[in-house]
Image 1: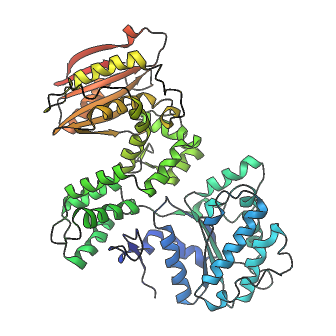
Image 2: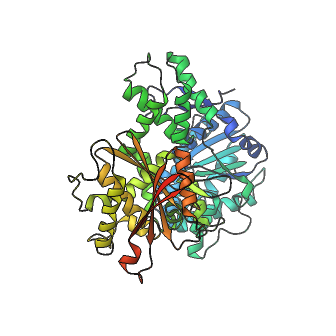
Length: 533
């Protein structure tokens, strides 16, 4: 029986110092064995770097070693952006042949590139069905096929591929029309998004598709907090280096269990901060430092997700999340599900959306405000908003009011192709965030927290050991009128007694004198400053 584990910390392959740590894999996808046993086809989707490819390699080896069936693992990564039907199907056949040639099963390996002369192989609309049919006929056991990166299929190529699989599935038997007993399309997207990509062409993959059954769309969930503890515990067993309880708590806080981030933070601490000195206990402070490094560095993995922030269907959903508003995106929206499938967002218990984890939250907001911050014409050398020990937040926000009044409609870059300005509702908070970052970055940090339906955006400015809490509202939203109550809750949660409520009024029929105001109040023993913009 093959060990039922997957590798932890597998970031850079066997040379990575954490390559050999393991986590039981089958409990994460218990239903797969049932689907294989009942000869069903299914979707497996999960965000990038969630362990999908590692899982497929494990399952392929497991099936082949157990000997009941054969398994073939085929990547379709090379089919990215090939929408032409003939080119896509020809490329898919090539990938199937390459997978066969790489197989450790002799009966499969020896058949690679031998089916090109079969009748019908010159017909694009039959190639996939023919090659899989003939391979199944030549084998003495049933075949299971995993198509990795299947969501990279698009356009007419996707339609033809799914149609051929459908026909092979519908007409399969145990003699002439043999076809894989089970098949999985694996990628970042759920079946709903495969179908969305078909609709624009007004074409259909036909009735009876083997992938049209909702309960056969599986996903790899993030690690639980206990699984993180187990993973890090294996490092402790191997090296004697301990993780205290605060380390596990902070790892969970920053990553939400996202597998790549769980691995990357640990690697950053052990190999980067501690230079493989296993004598020092790892604490929560180490994880906070590692998270800050990862946020600043914006790895290739994180960058590939952030590139999605400029896609129209992503903007439609993320705008509501960035602005804290609710009701603009249906809970049944395909675009909403797309953002969840990509791993950009997660749902809480009442199905409202928020960033998938704290690292993504920070990187997303900073990415969208960096361009603005770069072009802001502010004399940061004029430090009248700080005495070096504390930040004079009221003075700083009065400066912002003047800045907003003078240039909010006439910034030279306002109408350029900046990603942040594609977000209608969130633009206001982006501008304030960029302004604050420009001012305090040399001596402090700016953190932002947002979620769909909160009715506000929370900003925490950390400077010289002090926290300054700012809440951003858009006047005219359909949210509770008692904003001070909401700010008081925020202050209580952070243990603060003073806060600032910045209220953007988007009514251009009002004069600036009506929109720009300042009001100091005492509410529930909290000092509050209402800042009109």
